[in-house]
Amino acid sequence: MLKKTPLTRYLLVFLLTVVAALWIVPLFWMLSTSLKNETDTTNIPLQWIPPKITFENYEYILFKSLLIRWLLNSFIISSTVVCFDLFINSMAAFSLSRLKFPGRDIIFSIILATLMVPQQVTIVPLYLMVNKMGLVGTYPAIIIPRVAMALGVFMLRQFFLQIPKEYEEAAEIEGAGRFLIYWRIMMPLTIPALSALAIFAFLGAWNDFMWPLIVANTPEMFTLPVGLANFSGTYQFEYAKSMSAALIASLPVILVFLFFQRQFIQGVAMTGLKG
Amino acid sequence: MFKAWHEGFAMVDKKTIRNIRDGYLFLSPYLILVIIFLIYPIFSGLWISLHEWAILGSNKPFIGLNNYRQLFSDEVFWKSLFNTFYFVLLSTPLLVILGLLFAVMLNKEIKGRTFFRAAIFMPYLLSISVVGMLWLWLLQPRHGLVSYYLEKLPFFPQINWLGDPKYAMPSIVITTVWWTIGFNMVLFLAGLQDISKELIDASKIDGTNAFQEFWYITLPLLRRVTLFVVIMQIIRSFQIFGQVYIMTGGGPYGATRVLVQYIYENGFKYWKMGYASAMAYVLLLIIMFFTLIQLKIGEKEN
Image (cartoon, rainbow over all chains, first blue to last red):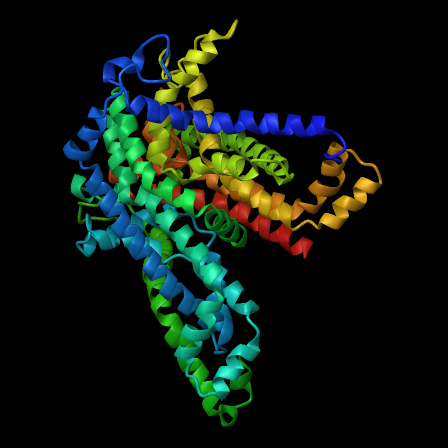
């Protein structure tokens, strides 16, 4: 159809170019603003290229704000969440898909039902609990609710179910124990699903906003989104500073995305559709 | 599942026992975490919502359904509920239709497809604070990029996007579309890839045009994915919070105060934990309603 009418094809490419431009221009504007003097940001007419490129905003953000600390916090928290999720969720998924025991199906139904519950429902009781444990303002407090989620287990279980029984049986005949079967057979066969879950869990923790906003109560403990929100409140009208902070904060994820684009998009599709 | 029990313990052999032991062993780390940090809080939240629960006071009187009754007469609650519905109503069609449109366009084999896909998807990776700060700047009156160029258009009124109650919520919607459209687009793309090429090719022999192909073949085949995306989008839109918190703080004049924000304010600014919990349960009911619709549709489809 498209081959017959090149006009449609040109129109398509044209439309997509417009759309892509609309999506990229804001990011370019962020970069451009971050390289300007504060006074140049409000020049009229607008200047796409900074009249005088300066790195003073970056200097300020890197050395005089806590942004690097927030980056580090977010990185520690997100990585911990990913490690926990990969191990604990895969073990649970293995149990729920490959082993037979009384109560299994009920437990799975309950886990499934929790998928319906929005985060906001548990936020008050969780805060009271964390507060009682004296954990407010610590890494564990920020991490805890993110390792008790159902989506990963649900998704991995679907994957484990697709693995033929023969693999296990063969291993069992060879005398392999349960843990060996889980670790040496099931896990390697689910690497695509595991990496999808890793990306999903990392992004979820990295961009989580409401819970860290509540429990990270000192600037030193802020995660990146919370720290930035705070920063934005203070420097709302200092656009050059705001945009350099936003840019530094986005750089790690954007770089990783550019390198692992396919995995990212597949991961999102996988977790999105299964959930 | 309970077969082993029914057939009597004589039948319970070594393997069954090992299965039970291993089953719970593998499950326990996750199960313990979920019970303590997810399932218990869900019920505890309901319990808290039946109390006047201030965090500092030692006195937490049981007040039955009073918090829920108070919600009915709380104008700010109704206003925030209304604002939330307004946001859902504005954002869902845009995010679904544009997501589908972009996906269909990108499903064709054209040059630069990977680039276009990456460009549209990228903002989804940014954290809400970055998106909020960026659009706060873009929508600034006069100097903001958006306002600057729109005002250059003939007859276009000067709009104070985030400062005008009429435009504040649409501004939040625009920001949200820019931020999250890539997610829906990727879901639709995955759905499109499952449609067999033969079917489309067969239709081409029959001489359908691009629109007919989309309307009569692609769309019906995408029905399941579309329903799924719609419901998930509704659920996510109901939970909107970050954009509003960063960009407007609920203003101007409460025009963008949404339900989750009001929950946050009650719980963690006024420390009215019981009242906040009651509101969270209202949100849970709304979301459960849509989830059940989804499950019902899913059942029918199967």
